[in-house]
Image 1 (cartoon, rainbow, N blue to C red):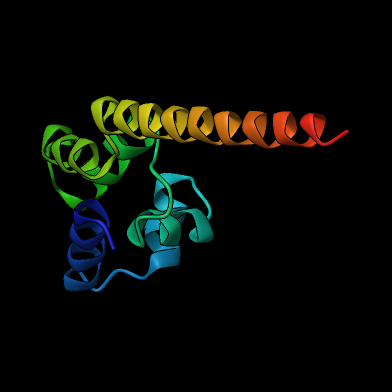
Image 2: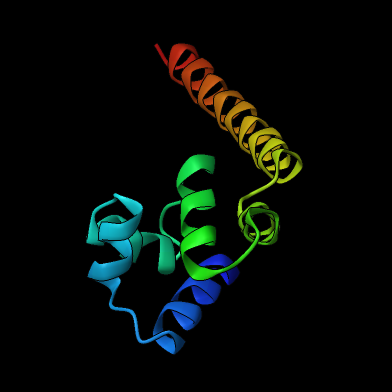
Length: 105
């Protein structure tokens, strides 16, 4: 579960608010709100603002949590570079195997 999701769920439950009630008030589906609480999905900024106001928070306090939970561009760029390196390594290996096959013909 994400920090954002935990904050929303804990506040909702401490206010004795059901998931369906909050979702209805925010104009989203209960399944989408559940996914937000579980950290599977992230709301739009407008939806996040509405959730924040409904729960009595400033939107900025929830923005900070949402952006903390999301993968950063830097981490995604690093993963992409590592994947490209692995692809290049495998391409070289395949090329070597193809050359070996050609040599046996």
